[in-house]
Length: 199
Length: 199
Image (cartoon, rainbow over all chains, first blue to last red; front, side, top):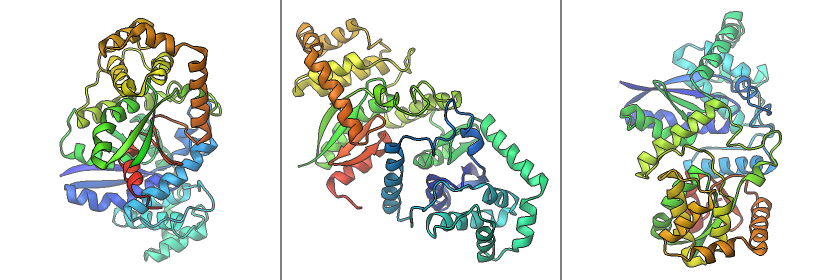
């Protein structure tokens, strides 16, 4: 079966949209999805002269981003309440998602996005992540303990380095083999490529 | 009739794609297009800590941009030979396009894009712009003279300031009234909005 890697960041509204869309679209295209949680901060910090593309964008671009997200979500039929804190730190959520057994990683990730972008919860707060875990019927103590081991923390660092080594510079990104697609806008194209490359 | 403003920069491959697509798509949607040539450089220079989003992007993002443009053009059926010099300075072409009578501005603009992105010509070179003008049957001396008057140069500066005041921060951009859409990726959405806003 053709397959696609979905690299997502919990702070990112465009990653949220992709997370909401990718399941049904990939199934319809007959493409398997590998959910790859990561954090984009360490990669953005390496950009010349700017700490974060998200936070240091000019005011016009920040205002535009919110409007763009609102317009797109309404078109897609995706629920959205623009978070009162933006961007929120997705590190803890990424650690939990990475440590999650594959069987509930997607469910957990979508629940975190819902907490951030629908329920306006502070996802960097452990209590919020615990509530999300309970909400999907997972053992919160076990999940947190697994997320916070030195080995799992190191694994996330390695995943970010792996992403960067393959050319990833933003979120969400999709990889089909070595072919990179950046942004929710490219989900359709990435799925087409997974079925049949044209270049 | 509903209408849309198309703000484009001659250095920008995504503006080129939009220029190739907008005519037929807007006609099909029953939307009138106003071609608004400008230069994005003065706006990008105001970004914090970076001289140009195009030139100062990290290497991974530069490599990605070229691949993205090549993949998209092939999907759209748009001719492309990645320019040996990139980005090229579009100031002279923008001055000529702005001074152009409305009846040939679109034709001239598309011919400049063809020179830059298909024939790999140096569009900042006056000889190349003269050849483009001859190619579309315009009086090259008259067109250049009109482009280089102090009044026309000042008009372009004013257009850039007008764009910035309305929130434009990149190219291409589409304006439907005061509603801004950024990027070739948003052309379809902007045309839908021109027919019926949903927010």
